[in-house]
Length: 202
View 1: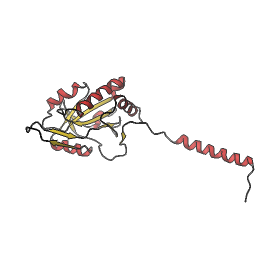
View 2: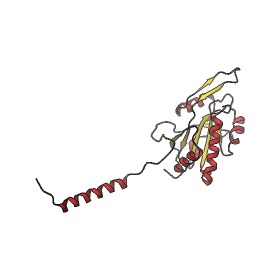
View 3: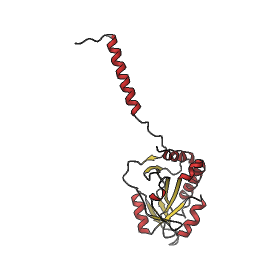
View 4: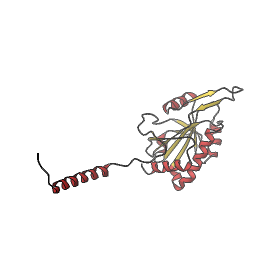
């Protein structure tokens, strides 16, 4: 068996330490997002809807901006107004970066959420927010592609139904890639921090 003197052992450890340091230097630290990472999913890549100004929209229209997409309906009693209020506070916290963020509210209730109603409701939370709509078939297809659950619950009259639906929001990076699921009820400061990371190319 070959014997190693103390000098050889020290040189070996030094070489191993250098190799380890090199490997660690090449490893990127994980980005500390609060939202759930969706960067590896193979769905939610795009949509084709109309905004409340009557303009056809897809993700390509917002290239260069971080996009937050939320599915809901204007007569929602709690989740939808709470989410839009949170996003309004988020925009305030973003400061100058707010101009590089687009919030989109896609209706799950095209029967009642007309273009005129969306144009009144959505910008009331923030003037830059856009409402999106389409016919029932198109909305159902987009909701399915984004794994959004929704179902009508009958009311006392045919027009007074409610809509149970998923509560998360989807965040895209400036390249139009789906990156995060933002949980309902998340603090605006944490949402703002996630969007700043996306804007920074993280």
